[in-house]
Amino acid sequence: MLNCHMTLFDVLDVLENGTDSGPKRKIGMIERTKKSKNMTIKVLVAESYNYDISEDIWLIVHVGVTR
Image (cartoon, rainbow, N blue to C red; front, side, top):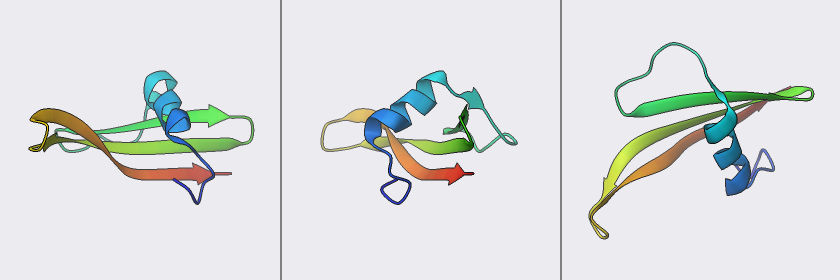
């Protein structure tokens, strides 16, 4: 994420406003894509569980930018 010069707000924007992309992933994984100007941003997140706070969470697995 840092290599792509993105913040958590950028990732959140892709997850909320992007479109589903690629083939279907495993259950509990979501891949979203957003096209912006001359680049395509992909975000892959996985559903998990945090035992410390006893809540379901989403982990950022991959963030990529294609120009």
